[in-house]
Length: 434
Image (cartoon, rainbow, N blue to C red; front, side):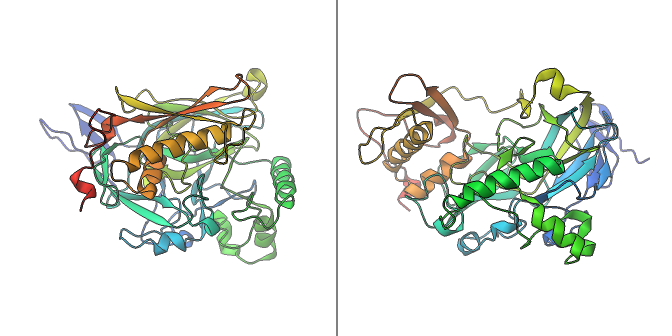
């Protein structure tokens, strides 16, 4: 074993050391179960990755109960986005590559009907990749919650400064870290996978030519199936690729839930559907707002997760579980001052809708954007900010007919200028005069 003795300082030694020293404590480093090379494409990673859900994707490693392991993860778009000022890469991004996931992992002893308890113990950026991106997808390439208002691709790059992120594309703002996985879940059974495909196919059939589409069916294009890539284009590979579910939506197993509070110190409880569980994860975010409204909306990054797992036998039946449950992190940004924007279920034409929560939250977002534009932001900058800043979205009322009420709480302390209303009116800061 390799030891270092250093007095009066903290030291993190990686990637090859096996011990950490900090505050006088010597602790064993987590075993790394996946390795990522951000300079290489998804199909050439040191550990095979997958971007589809299917029970026959082979396991990449075992996770022993209560063992702390480190999982490295590629970014959401598998290296397609560059740290520059040109949004062309985002405009032309191929969403068939999303999301490259690390796993699936075998948990010995896990059986269908169990609950897999996953502790997220730590999270961070990969060395040399201390930056991330957020943005707006073009309407024809996925769009976003407000794609009718903001149909063109826009990109924002964020540079990490310790626990903060700042962007040259959205000046005057500093966001604290709330690093979390956007995607995590266990592999589906063959029966559950068939049910996903059936119901999503039925939905697509109601408006098959819609742009953006109502859902994303299985597709061989840009499909990656872990170590099955050694058989790429074989009959076996094609069969699995034609069945495997895309990773875009959340489903019963978890998946792309994009819950910003699943940061270090949080716990997730996932239903198990196949022997060994087949746990996978990825889509690491530095920060995100509730709803991730611009779709490419969190600060997307390459990163790592330190986790450990436990098994609750027969937990699905014991607790009546249909979807995962989560215990949020006790460590997150603590803001003391917010502006809260309201939205109700009346559309832009003045038509009354009945308890439409989706419309109400849309209006809360639009109201916030219009407010921030008074301080010199463009609508696109404000839209992206609502997607990646740690805003709090709430369904505030669903019984007071005919209007649902949704609210968006914007923390004022993320701004380097005063955004609160005053008798003098909004003052545009110098950063938006440049």
